[in-house]
Picture 1 (cartoon, rainbow, N blue to C red):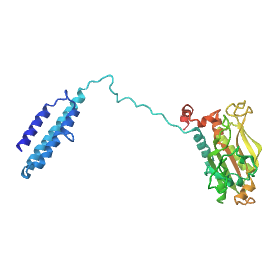
Picture 2 (spheres, rainbow, N blue to C red):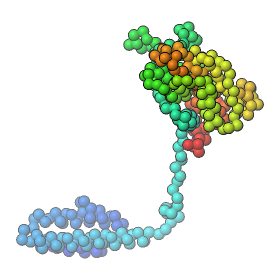
Picture 3 (cartoon, rainbow, N blue to C red):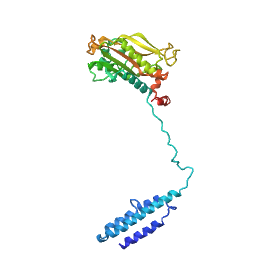
Length: 346
């Protein structure tokens, strides 16, 4: 007991003489108040004190601990006040460095805009697989076996040992989603089908081996071509503005009859002619038409009772016109200088 009391008094004297001018407060904390500090080592001696003396000695140790902690606070405050300001001091009142804003890809921006427009007309979003079989990608859509689209120069075919002779391919359009929805037999159908598609084409400023489409399908009773035209007029005005000119041209698609292509006045050159509009002043933005009766029958829908229209557009083509981009390859090169331009468009 006498030895421990003498040790505590010696430590108190040592603590009282500890100066912050020579040693930082952190040194004091580690030496006296740390996990392996002197205060803890002294308090560990309580186990050797007789039981009848524990209460008395415990009070002495507690006062010693409070004394050391108080001295530490004094040293810490003294150290903080004694540090002179320098030119390199951190000014905590300065604003922090601004973090760069991210942005959505222009393809995503346009796709979301297209979806939003058609959702206001009651169209739901439907999705399907990118690896597709021959029936859903070609046969059900009234594409004959000798159609050029089935050629390997136009389609990426996939060889799989477990295919059992079935032709598998990367889908060439999102029309496969339309077939799958029609096969469900839940009528009426009013859907749009956004997604990535693949075609074996030479990459250039106007074409790529993969791109994105949005296709639409509406099937009900008494659907007419006039319904199709009014739907697309609404889309063009909402996407490009009221001043854009529109024209329909007769065309041919195996899965629609009658069929048409829809052009708008070129927004890049203002109708004067450029490489995007092939110097005609007009740009085709989508194909459309009334769903062919054979397609309806292939999906077990009564073509005498139901009719419908379908349309499909490339999202890249819409994005090029909307943002006046002249090279399709920019969308897939991930050039930050290009992508940063769309930060404000999010």
